Image 1 (cartoon, rainbow, N blue to C red):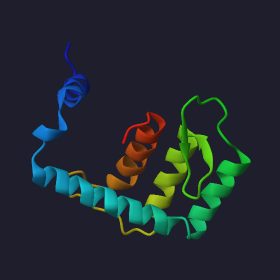
Image 2: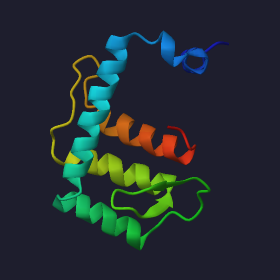
Image 3: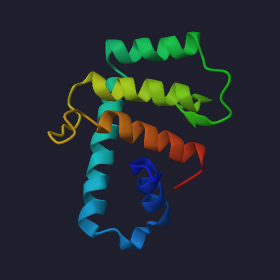
Image 4: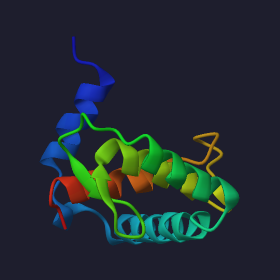
Length: 122
């Protein structure tokens, strides 16, 4: 059976940057910029400071993949994704999507950036 997730993965695996419309590239860049700004802002909030304290106190030690927390600490990929998604949502200024009925950027942008770093992608 060919599931939707499998179809999407196959499509993405075959996708080449030069075939992506410029308008889509520009929209993606705006989403990444918006998500990054919210992440940076979130580190200064009470909740952002608490999640960083939590990760320092209870680090994930089982992950082989590493990434960098905002501020420069290298830790597990899971820790970075957890902290950055929490911080991205703190200011409540992140993107909204009526179609998605939520704020996908606060999860997608930090996760994508952390996974890309762990895989040494540019």
